[in-house]
Image (cartoon, rainbow, N blue to C red; front, side, top):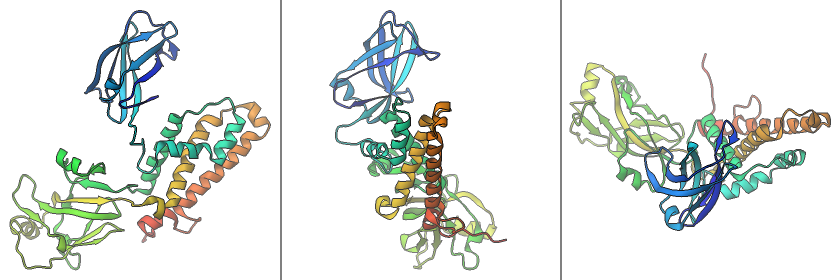
Length: 357
């Protein structure tokens, strides 16, 4: 994978292959640059130079790279060999390439200095691990632990419907997702429930809008005033406690009608809210440690421990395997706490887990 800087000239080469073997290039080669979905052309056709080894030299001037957005784009080559596609990563000069929690240049340097990585590198000195490969492992580890913990790792805005471009622009780069509304159930008002709702994502940072919207249009829209909304942010619990005597249009036509008829109404409760972890570096530093350890395990497991008799014979493979086991134990300890403790990040984020038989 090739990385280029937007707005700066770029010269690089890629190799055209078929079935894992280089394809000799004869005749002319045309290059284009598209979005990764292939729907938008950023750089129209321009000539590239191929040779008998299958290598194609590509040169982009500053005007051409200046049209490229930060992130991944697709280089498309066409010629006598057919069509071949390659991924390019575009960085901007002042905006670093990053995940939710890590800046690429900084975290890659930290991984290379990791004790287990250093030990593995000493065993297989001929193995070269690229920065892009390490970056892919960091991204995978971060995503995996986010799923394991069942929590957004950064503040994320959740919309009940596809947001408008204006709403997306207003987020100023904040992560967002679409989450279908909750079903309205008339029993949510019975006893002491007070319109009890549990959000799918937590901890809640803020509730920006809460609407009861009867399906099929604007009929029966009830905007719940902010002062009525009571939130237990950690557990995602929301209750609606009226604090004024104001009667809102549509209440009789929607909410009260549903209560009288005793029917569940699908996706009627539509909430726009922000949830996720904040200030992870200071509040959850052990999470960053777990992600880095997970990334190292992915690298070492993929690259540094091939089935090699010579390595196993001198005991180095066994030593690395033991070290990997310690990393797995450390990650589990961070996520779940000591064995049988019901602790760790799971408890810190979601509270103590229990089962009622």
